[in-house]
Amino acid sequence: MTVTTVEVDVARRRAIEALRAGVPSRDAVAALGTGQAAVEDRVSALLAGAREGRAGGVLLGGGFGAGKSHLLEHLGRLALDQGFAVSRVVISKEIPLHDPVKVFQAAAASAVKAGYGGPAIAEAAAEVDLDARGYGELRLWAASPAANLNERFPATLTLFARHRDRDGEFADAIVRFWSGDPIAAPELRRRMREIGEPRVVLPPVSTRELGGQRLRFAARLLKAAGCAGWLILVDEVELIGRYSLQQRGKSYAELARLVRGEHGAPGLPLAAVLAMTDDFEAAVIAGKGDREQVGQKLRAKQTAEAGDLASAAEQGMRIIDREMMLLAPPDAAELDQAYARLKQLHADAFGWTPPDVAGLERLGATRMRQYVRAWINEWDLVRLDSDYRPETETVDVVSDYREDTALEGPEAADDEL
Image (cartoon, rainbow, N blue to C red; front, side):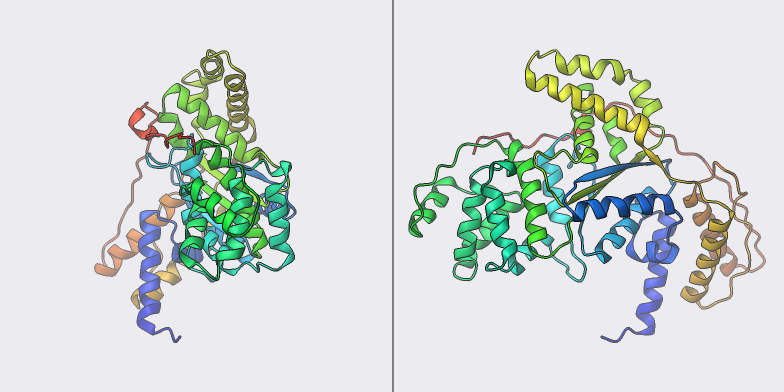
């Protein structure tokens, strides 16, 4: 397909508007790049481990406007180029970190592979060779105690192999189950009887348990279909600071699970990169007394499950406190490179020769987003009035960690299936 000059100009202007707004679009990330070499090296090692079945993750930290979302988009592009499926999950009221069901559903819905547009799990199911070794190993693994999966998963794998090319509607129902939807146990039993399988026992399982099981299963399914693994990018994790104490505790536990790669089964080709503000520990863990109160609150139920949750939450807080990988502030070379790239981009997008602009004074506390917006805005103003000499002032945005339980979102129903 031939790309027209108009389409190229539109893409350039789209990149400029995304950079001005601080939105990490594909065009914006390609135009600006990133100078976080240490983070790239860390994530490359993480992906190499995931490719070999060692699940793990890393927590990134930076101030508002430091380029966290931009960096996540860049890391996602690198992973796609290496053959990984990539998901982007933004923590919000609809996707609270403490709810593994909703986090999985968001990851499944946003998962993509290089060169494809649809959800990667559905594409993997459509493309996997049902007669190849990979699918056979997936079936053996799903039925093994090591996988720690409900019997619905090996049953659906057996039925999918029989019905993908014969009964598209039922095959789609199985794929939707793998992606987060319910599937009727009586229907599975009936279908298994029809193909001559012995009576299948499908023990009840809670929706919450299925959230973790689906994550494990989907990672192995993607691998069986030819993906190197699955990278899940989780942005705006700092929103958990506005949850109630108990839900913050559950969120810390989920953060620990993703970073430690403790998903309930070994050998998962799964990696996670999470990003949050770098003042979270001081403002929330220390500022709200979470280090002392969270474990005490969770252990108050005096059950083994509550004790395990408290320990995981405390581990999550230690990760935030001691292991957060901070984004490096832009140095002079990176700023010079970014300025030159943006100046050329503005020239190409609007067909003119931008003059040099002052932008902001180069200070250690100034964020990359502030530099970028200042340069773009000043070029826009000078383009409209060549005699105008703009001066830019900045105002710091203070993180808001006031509790708002409405942001926790309703948890997914924990029904028995």
